[in-house]
Length: 82
Image 1 (cartoon, rainbow, N blue to C red):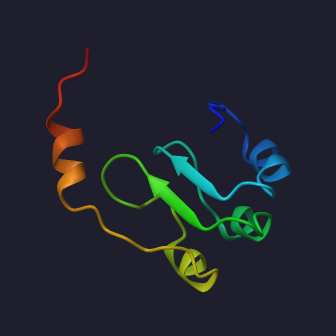
Image 2: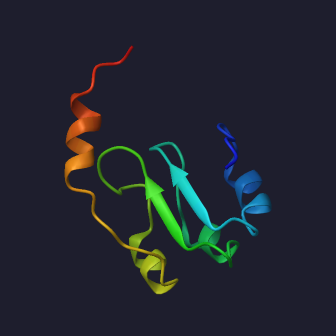
Image 3: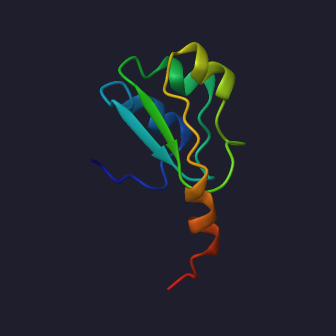
């Protein structure tokens, strides 16, 4: 696992090819262009509520896992910040 916060879209596209999974928060946009640059990607995880920053149509076409963790967003939204 690599933690690389703050990458620009171009920087992320440049390094994504060998990765099997991608976990993002709301600032990272998972676009068709990013998915096209990620031939090994098998899953995209979106931490938080919603998938407004994920091109779900392109992810589905790429045969990525499409799962809904219904209880997780409730925990995330209700947990106070430290």
